[in-house]
Structures are given as structure tokens and as C-alpha cells.
Image 1 (cartoon, rainbow, N blue to C red):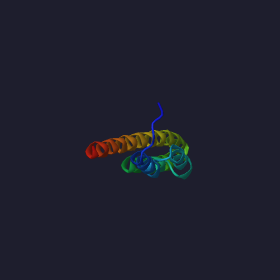
Image 2: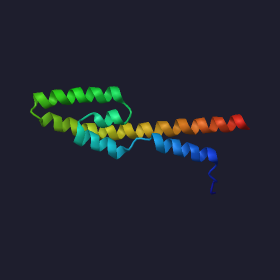
Image 3: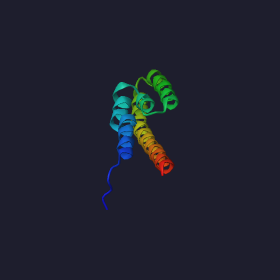
Image 4: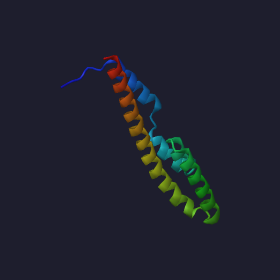
Length: 105
């Protein structure tokens, strides 16, 4: 069955598109800007800051070898955090739309 998109549905989709986090951007930031920056971008700033500090320490202590490992791990983590952010956002917006719909009926 094809469902018509109501105004409320389109508003919800627009808000989701405006606030979602790109998984690709999160990965690229972690790999090419600095480890932890993708996690920070994806919505978990405190975890991102911790990864940045660990990455800095590994960069200094291991002459870059440990940094490469943490950067790869950070990219995978940023991808997971971005997906989780998007799912949580979509769930919240869906619940808000349903609550508005219920209150108008």
C-alpha cells in the first residue's frame, strides 16, 4: 500500500535531513583531519575529545605508528556514532510527529 506524504511527514523528513550526520564525513574527518574529529562531528563530543587526547599521546610516544591504528579505529567508531545519531534522531522525530498527530485528533 502506498502512503501519501502529509505535510507533517514532509516536515519531519526535512528536519531529519537538516540534522542528520553523514557517516562518510565522519569517517573522512577521523582519517584525514585528526583521529577523534569524526566522532566529535557525529555528536559525541566528549568521546571525540578523549580520542583526540589519546591520539596525540600515541602520536608522540609511538612516533606515529600507534596514531595510525587509533585513526583507523576512530573512523570505524565515528561511522557507528553517526549511524546511532541518525537512528536516534529519526526515532525522536517520528515520536514527535505521532504525538502531534494524536493531539490534533
